[in-house]
Length: 160
Image (cartoon, rainbow, N blue to C red; front, side, top):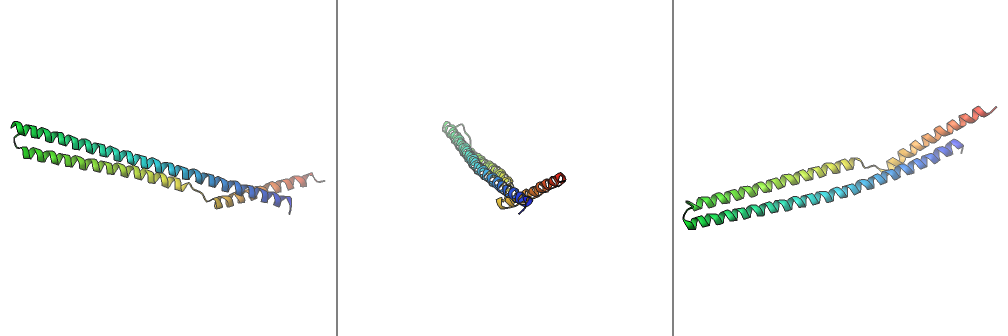
């Protein structure tokens, strides 16, 4: 085995190992990023659920306060048609709770679609260590052959 071949194989091995290692490291970083995205998405969804539940409780409490005022007015004889006021209050509460549910659903969909877009972006950056190693090995062999040929040409010009 000549100098050129030995150099080409050596650089090919080094290129293969370093490329495969770089691909593995990048894939690990992508995996950690995926886990971080998952935790962040779950946290955001939990925050949205808690906020929606709080808004619902507030609206239910407001409706109960209005109901109490209607009953006080009924006792004082100043409320007019109490049944219509109670029905309007019930309808408003139902509409408000429905809006809160719809907003919550839309916000969850937005968070989920952002998560999925980020995951797709991460997935597109993963690399096969095998293919990276093969590509790095070929580049190393090519570089080794070029260097070996250059050394050979230099030695030829030095000979008398």
